[in-house]
Image (cartoon, rainbow, N blue to C red; front, side, top):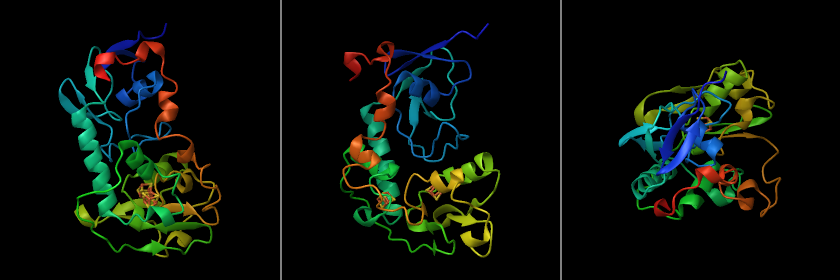
Length: 246
Ligand code: SF4
Ligand code: SF4
């Protein structure tokens, strides 16, 4: 006999979760989008970007690592959380170098798409213009740390999906940066274009050479629909938010 569903609420609307699900998993199933940049359903969660932070019974919690427990009240789409998520996205833009119009990832980039979803077109924060290393040593895969948002997805993908350990972080604090497990750069690693780690980057830091600009403007993934629309399209009628919460 399967375990009974757990009932909880998101922005006042009733939602059901399977036993063991995290808040983000249950909300995805219910068609409720919680913004995220460092989460993929098929990889272990990292809780790194903090964009999925919700309030659970009034306390902040990252939805990707917080299990559903009975009757919790989750706040997700509120003015307060929207403002905090905007700030996180703005900080990610100013901490790196993001010339979107020229970037190979444009139109297929989760950070750019999140900015569009949030209506962000400019920031009052100070741009830091870091000068980070690029790595063009590999014949098929390019690494431009200037756009890295330190989400850790490539690290988790390389370890858990590819059975390798190509990527890691080095240094601390503001000097933290992506590193690879060879002194010869990416060319000295065993990464392959078919690896999950080569495709998982949500921004333009890890790209497969020769694939940029393949999709014409207007047909790129986020030209077609906003980020999160695929999840919201699955919304079950029972998970509709109440009018008062919209
Ligand atoms: S990685 Fe994304 S946000 Fe950064 S420049 Fe490229 S498209 Fe823009
Ligand atoms: S290279 Fe991409 S996937 Fe890896 S930490 Fe940076 S942004 Fe995340």
